Image 1 (cartoon, protein in one colour):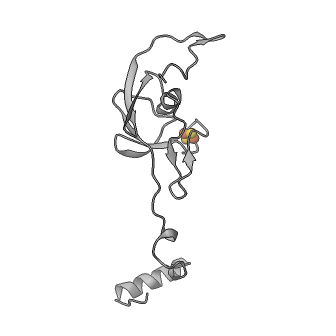
Image 2 (cartoon, protein in one colour):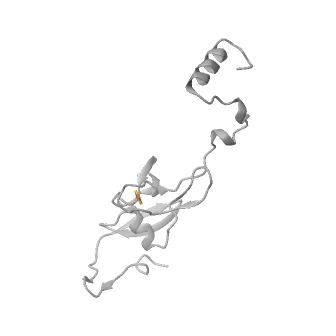
Image 3 (tube, protein in one colour):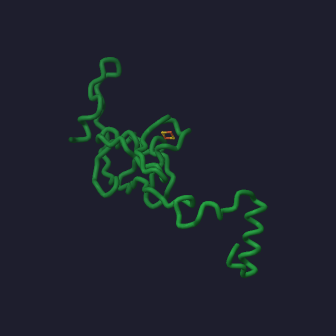
Length: 137
Ligand code: FES
């Protein structure tokens, strides 16, 4: 599928899409093409990519939601910088874009949930006990 197949090339009201500078970028190691004026999200959508990341805990797919920069559902990593909103960020030639992955969460760790502090006071008490060398803290 080429980058032009998912675009409106000749709109009945707006007219034909003008030729624009083609830009090359990668997403999760695959090379795609977009146009100057695209956002990362629009370029990926034009290439048939709807999933931009996964939910960090559950691994469920995430993509464009608001498309105006409010929800952060479209966050990607761009040239090593995480949390970049694909819907607001203009595409640049040579960009390296990666999606997110699931991350370990405290409640899924090897710690017993009942041992985790429930309040800030409990947290401070456990921290002080830990610093004092109390292994039961
Ligand atoms: S889709 Fe909502 S911030 Fe990008």
